[in-house]
Length: 122
Image 1: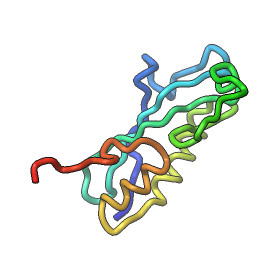
Image 2 (image 1 turned 45 degrees about the vertical axis):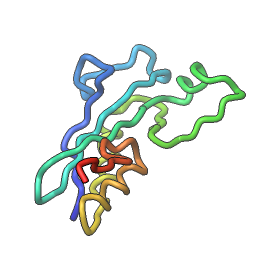
Image 3 (image 1 turned 180 degrees about the vertical axis):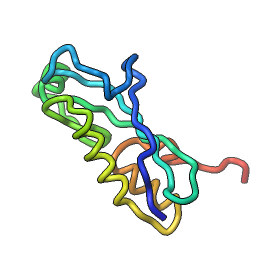
């Protein structure tokens, strides 16, 4: 099985990401959601990531803070095409024997919607 990136958007921004321009070019941070599915079977699931700049981190954390980088993408400027291309490259190189294996690999990038899911019906 192979993963594909179907969509990318932010629920923090009112406009489409491809049309977005940060107020301060090198100081911003917001959530993005990746919609990922399997190449041949369809379906989709979400991966949540926080996109920010180093200056945003400096302005929002103190020197004594320790930040664990999982679910963060750090960029120096907002370039939608470059960000999209990098994410597509990462995601579309993820393969697995089943979707659960792909999901576990995706969860290394960001918060997978079914991470730690347990079926309570059994």
